[in-house]
Structure formats: C-alpha cells, structure tokens
Amino acid sequence: MIQLTVNGQRYSLDIDDDTPLLWAVRDAIGLKGSKFGCGAGLCGACTMHLNGQPIRSCITPVSTAVDNEVTTIEGITPAEGLSPVQQAWVELNVPQCGYCQSGQIMSATALLASNPAPSDAEIDQAMSGNLCRCGTYPRIRAAIHKASA
Ligand code: FES
Image (cartoon, rainbow, N blue to C red; front, side, top):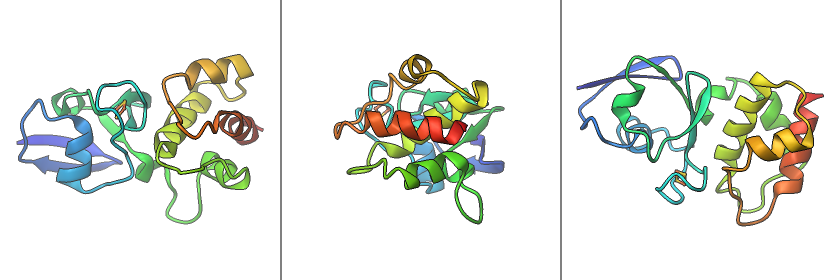
C-alpha cells in the first residue's frame, strides 16, 4: 500500500512503488487534470508540484512522493472561481488546443510563488521545460506578467 497526500487529502493506494506519480493520480485517484504527453520528462504536460516545486510526474515514481505534499491543478483551483494565474490565463485567452495548459499553469504558479515579479528572461527559463505545440508562448509570458501585477 502506498500512502499519498494529494491536494491535502490522504490516499491509500494499492499500486507498485515504481508506478509513475502521474498514473497514481490520474488512474488510482481519478484526478484527470494532469496530462500525459511524452512520458519521458520532456514536454511538461504532466507537471505537478512536490512540496511546491514543479516536477514531471510521468517520470517520478510514486514512492518519491510518499511523506511529501503533492499538488495538482485541481489543488490550486479555489472552490469558487479561479487562482490568479488561471484568471490571467482566461483573460488573455492563452490556450489554443489547451492540452499542455495544465502543466503550463502549474509551472507558472510555482514560478510566481518563488519570484513574484519575474523578468521575461526568468519566465522563459522557468517555463522552458513546458512545450506547447500551438505556440502560445507569447500569451503565456503575458499572462504570467498579468498574474504578477
Ligand atoms: Fe511528463 Fe511529457 S508527459 S514530461
């Protein structure tokens, strides 16, 4: 049994230690906001937070997350309304197809938690591991500035 804390809630999961955290969260717990893109740690679609730091959950064994705090896109979404980052995303119409945007928002949220007013260069560096096939990068950068204002 794996004991996991996700978005402040404790779960006991009957899964192997080396199951990727992404599948523990999506399949065993049923939170589908984190996406599978490459499965190799290269695209960022699966980004979650582990103790507030962005991680690639597709290559993180679930055992790594035991005794740590996992946060997913569901966990940063208030019961009513949107987080400041999500609100900026909506106001600037950031998504095109939308598939990568959960991971983008998780990386942006972690960036702003550690650096409330990042420069363009700091944004580009922090977001460089999150790929977007639709090329929404200019709007992502603008939304991060908006959320930081
Ligand atoms: Fe995890 Fe691409 S699905 S980095």
